Length: 286
Image 1: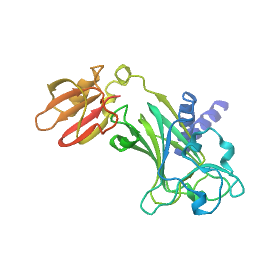
Image 2: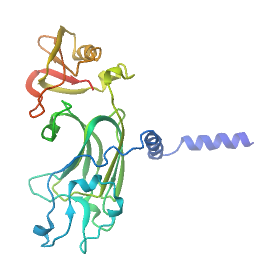
Image 3: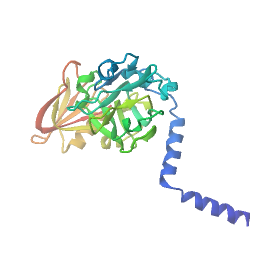
Image 4: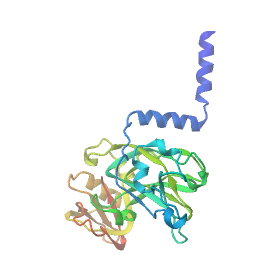
C-alpha cells in the first residue's frame, strides 16, 4: 500500500508544470555556477537620464555601473528626496533604450537575474529582450558588439520588479544586453549573470556539437592571419577542420570555390574583423 502511494506521488511529480520543472533545472544549474560573473564588470547605457535637465533637481542618479555594483538595498530608491542608485536611461524618440555588460571573457551563459524598482514604475522594466553576443574577435571593443553572433535568451513583454531568465542550452557569449523594443525609459537596479567560463573550445568535450553551436556569420569574410587552406565539401566540414587546429579561431568557407581557409584571431581591436562578401560563411570556434 505504501509503495503504491509512493508511485502515485512520483507520477504526480512527473506531471509538474513545465515552468516549475524549468525553474528546478535552472536553480540546479546555478548551483554549479553560483558566482555572479557580471559583478563590477564594465557596462554601457544607450543614454543616461539627467535629473537636472528633466526634473530641475540635483541628486546622484542613473549611472550604468549601478546595475552591477552588487548593492540590492537600492531596489527601493530614495527618489525624489534622495539619491537614486539604479541604472536609468533617457527616453529618446530616435533610439531604443538598452543596457549592456562586458563579461570580459567568453562564458556558457546559464541564467540572468534582473532586478527592477520596487517602489513604483514597473513599466520601466518591460518590453525588453535579453541578448547574448559572441564577439567575432576576442579583443573587439564596444563599438563592434553588433558584429558578433547574437542569441536572444528571453523576451519580457510585461512590467516586472524582477525577472529570472534561463538561456537556451549552450548559449555562449561575452556581452549581455538588455534592450527595450521601444524608446521608453529603461530602469534596472541590479543584474546578476551566472555561467561557466570557456577555457579552450578545442580542448572541450563537446565534440561534434561544437559545429552545431559555432558562431556563424553568412555573407562575410574574416580579417585574420591565415593558418592554412584546403578544399571542403561544405562549411560544416570546414568548421570541423578548424576544431582540430589549436590556433584556429575562424573557419572561412567560400561557396563558389569550396575553399576552406583557417584563420587565427584578429589582430586589430580598433576596427571590425568582418568584411562583406556574399559568397562566404565565417564560423568562429571559441
